[in-house]
Amino acid sequence: MINSQLLTDNLAEQVAVEAIKFYLAPDVVKTLKQMMINDIKKSVEDEKKLAHDTLFNALFKSLAPFEKKFQAMLKRIWGEEERILIANIKKMKKAWLVKDKVDDILYPTSIFEKKLEKGASQICIEVMEKEGPRVVNLYDFDMIFDVQNPEVTKWLKSYTPMFSEKLEEVNVKRLRATLIEGIEAGEGVPGLTNRVYTLYKDWGFKRAEDIAQNQVIRASNKAALNVYRQSGVVEKKIWVTHFSPNTCAHCEQLDGTTIGLEENFFDLGDESRVEVEGKEQVLKMNYETIDAPPLHNRGRCTVGAVVD
Ligand SMILES: [Zn+2]
Image (cartoon, rainbow, N blue to C red; front, side, top):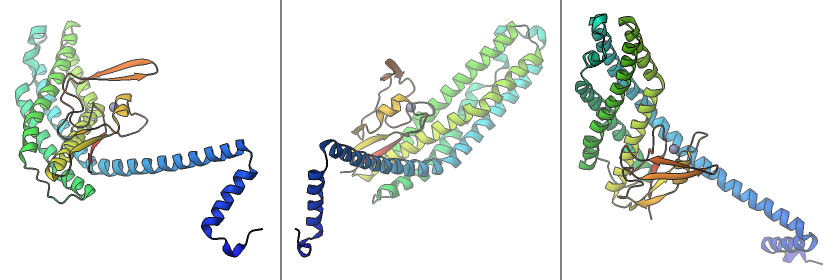
């Protein structure tokens, strides 16, 4: 018989636990225990998912206007290229349309590289101007982010020329290939202009969006890295993967990887190796050193600060 007046909450709980142990068969205890473990695991998972979604929703909302602006900039420059190409093709007589005349049709690449570099650089600065202070707030760092600091300038000066040069290289390669194909097939002015229209029309959809997203999230993550540097209190950084049905195994594997602030996740030429359904997949870093995400085209991951 238990004296109810002596029964404190704490004691009541102990009695209950003991009673359950005593009355329940071992397999029932086991099941109950597993149910509780699953419940706790689920609530931890739910909390993690909520934190993940909150972080990325805020990030993507902040970046969306810049992605649109970047896309518009690309389409404007590509539109100019297209007009020059079409005009050049129309100047040609059918008899001149031979393979080694392709370069006469092309637009002046170096001028367009410069335009692209200028446009990309401008938008990257705008992204960093907005993202820097946002990250400062997120961590409540006692500092003012300076977009003019030498690290940011150094990155922009090395990255944007490389970006525009590589992008133009791809454009020219694809244009040359389709023009040569058309010439070899005996197509005249209408056939070739049509090829140019089709290519730029295609680029205007998914490719422009992919490139814009990639550049904008890159600039945003560089801003975060520079905030961490300028804060003076961050020594390590962490890879934060964006989980969605499209997340690749490489990014999934990287989630939570923590390294020194000045270290690289991958150096140029390094490889990321993952196993998917028993098969090894290799991703070679041949674009740039990965000191922050994105890992690849369409990558949506970000970089966090580890503060002790
Ligand atoms: Zn990925």
